[in-house]
Image (cartoon, one colour):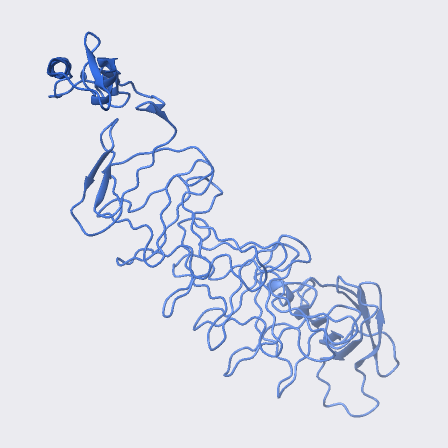
Length: 503
């Protein structure tokens, strides 16, 4: 019989029991008789080995803050420090149970991931039928990178929804970029609604020169940087306590443009105060620029209407023009005024200057047409050297004392009451048969006519001896009236006086 002695270590290792180094087992070959004593010896060695095996583990096999790291060949457990948790771990470790890299936790249906407690991620069932995770509020996080710190997508409904009873439903802050950025392929990037009558979208600027709300169109003509639409109200509304309610600026086009396709007004301005403001005001600081310009192919370029005030009013500083009209064609009116009743078609008023002035380089400066072509409520004035109107008129009574012989007079070259107040700026120099009237303006280009005021109606024969005007002589600033008697034609003073008119 051939027998082989085998160390108990092999069997112990196979059975996962304690070592059998002190005992040996007898191995039997086929065809060899077995002795009872040898079999009993093997069972005795096996019993000893089984009695020395590791007992069942009860409780925690490792200390607090440790985990089971492995089992030795002798059945003993080895423990290692737990790198996550408050027991034995440390903050900021780079591995989990000896494993490095990242660990992704994704909340599925009925799963909740709670990170409200520092150093812990609590995964639990939500008990609801909805999917997705949630964050316990208030939650604060930070990220550094080009990717979004928080990204949510919804292919059907609302991606992000916020609500607040008294604060901000959604609040965003950016140091350099956009506070809120929204993009839409075919609809609105940002939509705001309000049910309290305030504003659907509100923008405010805390820096001088910046805009509360700004819209930019970088595509081309026909689009709008900011577009407001309202069926019964205002499409775009601006208000300011001291600045510009709506400010428009353009390098080459329109700063502000209004268009109306039916009956209405393209741009409308209103001044509701009692102060001296303007409903619509335009300003231009250069010679060839225009403060307010109106263009029309067939209608009125600029029209002003007032129930009881001024329809159109123009104001200019020294040397300028309050209202100017210009026609570039062969016919028409530079400025036209119409009155449908008994008022003035064109009315001019000036406290010290000219109420209405007309000038033409080659035609008529001012022309009147009608049953009464021209009416002057006051004196008519014409520059000496031009014909048409009287430049000066005087009635002389030689029977009065010297210095009082001018009875009535008119001087077109004076102003105010002095034009008709004796002596009207005139003076007399008298000699026998000669009376020189000094007019104080150049009389050489005027036309003079003199008429005696003596009453000689009873004399009809040539033997009557009475004065008659024999000539009118022009000097620089005066006119000499010469009178002679009718009998011998010697110089003779007029019996009463004469009337002299210069045209």
